[in-house]
Amino acid sequence: MEPELEQLPQKAKEKHSENKKFFAKLKKRPPKDLDYTMQELHHAEFERTDCLTCANCCKTTGPLFTNTDIERIAKHFRMKPSEFIDRYLRIDEDKDYVLQEVPCTFLGADNYCSIYEVRPKACREFPHTDRKKFQQISNLTLKNVAICPAAFNIVEEMKKRIKM
Image (cartoon, rainbow, N blue to C red; front, side, top):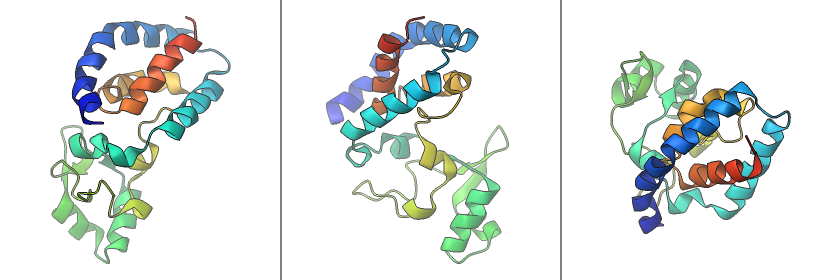
């Protein structure tokens, strides 16, 4: 997995303008079956991909924490939400709660998440390639293809399947 991960930012950079054009067209005229196609591509890719061999998302980026996430995780740790915030989070430039540092505090050396059962919604949904109305998150997807090999593969397969 390491060589593939090392090459991923460069591969994503090389495909960036092609992907950007594709997503611009997709936004204007999304196919009727886009959600179904994305679900299919997502599930097929994650049949082949084991996130535990990678965990690049946890190592290089941090999720946004909603108030619901904060309450749920704080309860898991038997602490007050304000204590959880003080200990683990900061407010970013967009006024969102994010981790104080990356890699994620909750990521173990074995790539397992110590709060997996109560992890933030953003983590549960990453890389967001099976989201409904997928065409609405093209900017996020453009970023994620440089972080997640599975997202990169899904977008490449998507371009083959959906002719724009």
